Image 1 (cartoon, helix red, strand yellow):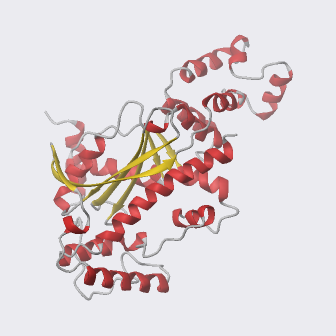
Image 2: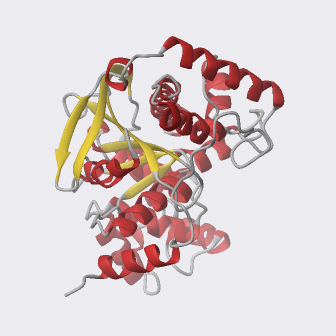
Image 3: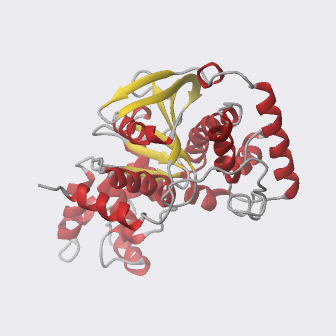
Length: 362
């Protein structure tokens, strides 16, 4: 009997029959102004092309395994390649008691209470949601809220807050303090396009150490496709990082990364539950620094907040071209900056998350 995943997979594949999963750009074919580099700054594009040429020369005759040391692993979907690295990070999470107090003091989270009504209630001594328990009108709703709040269902709590506030609101962000640093799954993907194209690299980072310890090691697992047919196995590897208390930490992941991974799961008929509390740093960053930073691209915030500028970085728009050059030539050189770009994105994601806690969680 076919499962819902089988039926969705068949529909997706049927819809994609006339769409090639990927193309190989012929050698010498201009890409600038085409599928990937449209709107890029010409100077940035030119620098990237020089970088690619240099890498092709540097890594000529070198295998992928030599250029990017890793390990071949296997799961039920096949073989895949994992590049593992470690670093150190101070991963800040705000005081849970303080964040709980901030959330519970906002009476507007209860249906029927607006700004005016909240002021009236607070004048009458109802200063927090628990204190509304005995209120004749709002008591039942307050009790239901507290039941959810005390259940530690951070996904449900976040969804409730997002009913009344935008996803960029600090109250939504404060829910992250209910998790320990070790609960977070930092995730970033690189793809061959913006829709219905293979994911070529899945980057996952996790903070390890004693629970509750803010300072610790960060471990990077990067699942790199040596060939497109390794995508199902790489996707399946993602599931091994997701536990009952896991929470996603991404940059634009609500709009892009998580839906994209879910769509690829469906495409291959893979089962995977990605419904977790999700803290997307992009909308929070726009609220926090949108008026002072030149823009809220990850690399811009990296320079604006931390004074760091990447050298020999591959622009996101050119990741497909660099990967296709690898597929065309077998030379792993163009993959090197893709893997480094992805790892650096994950590291900066963790630092931005901590920076937001420093800004809002005091």
